[in-house]
Image 1 (cartoon, rainbow, N blue to C red):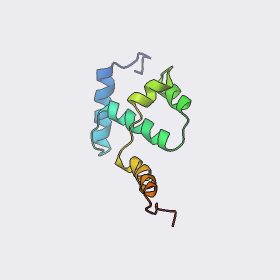
Image 2: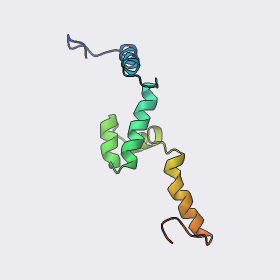
Image 3: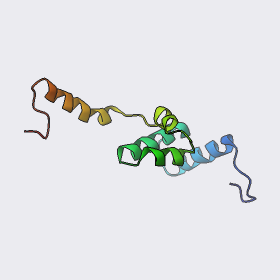
Length: 95
């Protein structure tokens, strides 16, 4: 919000965020991507779905999970290791 209490427009918010990223020496990322990364991090660290949805401002948990929680390669590695155990291989941690 502005000092006067008015909400920022999307353009103003984006401009301020990019300026802050530059000042802090951070890689410039789209705010949508940063939002998705934050929700994925929270989900992977045990935050319940209904809390994620509330934090995102969604009334439907499915919306949050569909659009914002995106597993990456590292997130999928544990599942791949489990699949390895299915065909007779020894899964990591089960030796």
